[in-house]
Structures are given as structure tokens and as C-alpha cells.
Image (cartoon, rainbow, N blue to C red):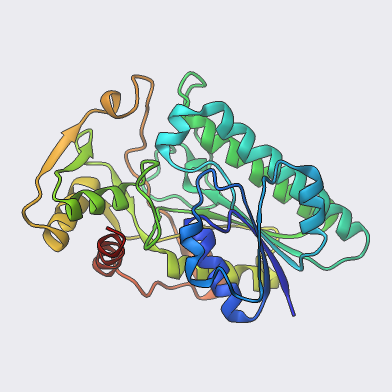
Length: 327
């Protein structure tokens, strides 16, 4: 039986991944400090006989050593999440993203030296591209961050350090590790509490409140269902040729944020209105946004035959059904 460790396994993406691993027959160890995760996310399988849930922080070196040593596969998803949280807690964002990753990789490196066979997935983000001006981002593109006076860029910079560490461990210690850069992953169990745009829009529409669009709404994003993304994660980790590489994971079908709001209004509640709010009012005067964020998915398509089963309408309907049941 494979033993899989999932950090942040009570979070949005993590809980869906845990569910898939249990369905696969793995013994799954989840470590989560519930800072942004939620036990409600794993209610449906909390009592599964092969699930071991540990409330704790992966900033605890002893705990990391204990759980990493038991795992055949490590899925490191725990991190600071959401634009709102990053804007409010930049120090915590940097510390939570870098230090635990180094602890995990250090221990995995020791295991590899001892002859153990272990695989690791490191979750990264489209934020690492910063404000690269290219219309579509591929994995070998430059990372273009803004000024250090803008806290927004601390998130992408800290996750880029995670990537550098992971790839360094692959080169120096032959660690089987793969990095996945998530592009706006959405679906059931996601909260809008940390600024995630689609659940925030759907929550407002379900409640009959106006949908609030930041700035002019012409920012462009792509949205992928978490079910498609979790399958991609498992396929990447299972594929030898993916080790030591970085992959964009998401959708490459762009839509403006205003168009997204209108689509949510149309499908969820035609009677809710749409309002606009400046970034300064939503966050603060230092906030700087990325106008266009579209991935090139050629690499992941060639590597694992990645394709999506959910289009945007299906995603909105799934999120709306979940939010209505939750309400």
C-alpha cells in the first residue's frame, strides 16, 4: 500500500486530492494547522479507515521528520493563500511559504541519500510570473516582479524560492520532485474569504447581494475545475519524465472578470446587480494587480495528455450548487 502525505489536506485543493488518494487505495496522512483549511472540507471521508489526520504545523521540524519518513509520496500544498491574506499578512506569507518547504525537501533529500525511493509534488502558483508582459505564459518565461514596496509580489517571490529549492534538490540529490503552477483553480469547497474571485461572486449571487468587481473588470483570467487539476497532479507524480520539471496547471480559456461576473449573474441569480470597487478600497493603496494571466499548457498536454472535463459554465454551476447547499 502506498502511503501518501498531503500537507494542507484540509484546504480546498488538498481535500480533493486526499479524496482521490483514498479512492486509489492509499493510506493518507494529512497535516494541517487549519489556518486557512477547514475540517468541513473532509467531512465526507473524515472517518475513512485509511485516513490519518494530524492537526499541526509543518513549521515543526520534528513533525515534518516524522511524517515525511513514513511517506512514499509527498504532496506539499500547505501555503499562504489568497490575495486578501497576502495583502494583510506579508511576513506570515513569506515565512509560511519558504521555511516548511525547505524542511520537507531537506528531509526528503536525507531519505534519498539513504537509498529510499520517494516522490514529491510541490504546489506553486501563476503568481511566480509576476507581471511578465507576454500574453501567454510558458514555464521557461522570465519572472517579472514589481517593487518590494508592493507586498503583493512577496507571494510570487516566495513561491519562486520554493521552486528553486525543489529543482535544486532534484539536481543535487536526484530527488524525484515535480512542481505545479496553479492557475485559478476553482470548484466546490473553495471559500471567498481570502479574495478568491469565483466563490466570492457566487456567494454574493446566491445571497442576493450585488457582485463586486474590482477596478474596471477588464482583468483577464482562466478558470479550471479542481477535479481536472487533482487528476493532473496525480498523473504528474506518476510519470518519470516529469521529475525535475515545472508545469502550468489550469485552463487556457480566458475571460474578463466583468464577463465572469455577468456569467455568474446569468446562471446563478439574474436579479443580483454588479458593482465596482477600487483596489484601494478593497485592499490598500499599495496593491498592484496583474491584468492578464493565461497559461501555455503545451508542456503538460505533451507530458501527460492533460485535458479538462469541465468548462466554465459547468464550473459555475458546480460552485453554485455547493454554495446553495452550504447556505
